[in-house]
Length: 217
Image: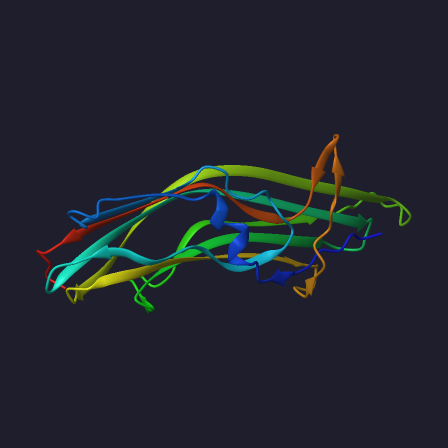
């Protein structure tokens, strides 16, 4: 019997992330800001769109000053596909996709670029069985789990000579499809003693902000 897979989405509370963050800021110069999350979150089968970090007073710029914002983040992806094919029944297939994206707001306005993919995987599996015996069938299951660390620079400016708020919003999506391309429930399971599924997650993350007065934007 074919295993099914699917799409889940939920908004996670900011409180899930906030306690693990530590901040460092020089109030004298107010030209730099640093935040570090040493823990991250565990992998989860749920998609999420949540505030990873939100600071009301992160950095003060000079008149027409701009900010360069660097976000480094560990990214976790799990993808699992399972396909059963019967002899003479043609090709059977399934796919699983897991994606983590991030965007940054300064004073409630999107920084440039507006949305960055930190990690993404589309896994598709197709099986065709031809033995001449119509009762013959085969099931093939493929699972991958990876973690990587990636960095991207965001930019916003020119800004006024005020204290600026900064918010990092992270979006995670899982999506699985059957042989017809229809979105279905993502299949959990165990393979060689390993818990499987299609999931996303975030590990350690570092946010740095610096002011730049010379800009051609």
